[in-house]
Image 1 (cartoon, rainbow, N blue to C red):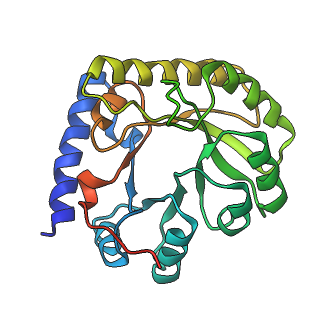
Image 2: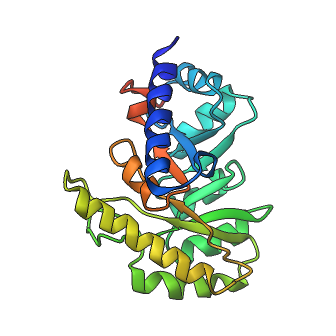
Length: 230
């Protein structure tokens, strides 16, 4: 059994526990393996475990993986996407987790050849070091996307603060869940907003307890091997 397989077994046990505590179904939570800093070989190890959702955060890293991996996987772009790089990325991925400005939406509308599933990034903690909209901005922003036919807002994404205070982390996730439910209740065709992308290696259990449907797990799954992006 590879290290990745062992890590995944442990992660699945933790997910099961979090689902039990929150009375949720395990199948309602999708693991995104964040492969952004590991080699193609390590990424293939991940795929061999049965994981089909992979996350990258750089256009060149994504291209390297796409060139080497032909498996039937779903690609998630989880990093900030520069407007000038949209043309290189948007038609190669299945999900974008970092939609946070109209200029990006305009470029997606211009470059995408089909409707793209997007998460609107919300900076719940309002940290200057993090990208994303405030809670107040997010609702208005999503309303403005109605006329962008290539964008479907399937959910919201956030990153919790880097802290050991679980109360703080839980509050961030809880606020995103409340916002998601508020937007979903509007019944917007362009923004069904049923999904929540939140939780990483250190806090995915809390995120699941608070409603996460996609968790982005890197180090806890793939280890700390770093890939040299050429």
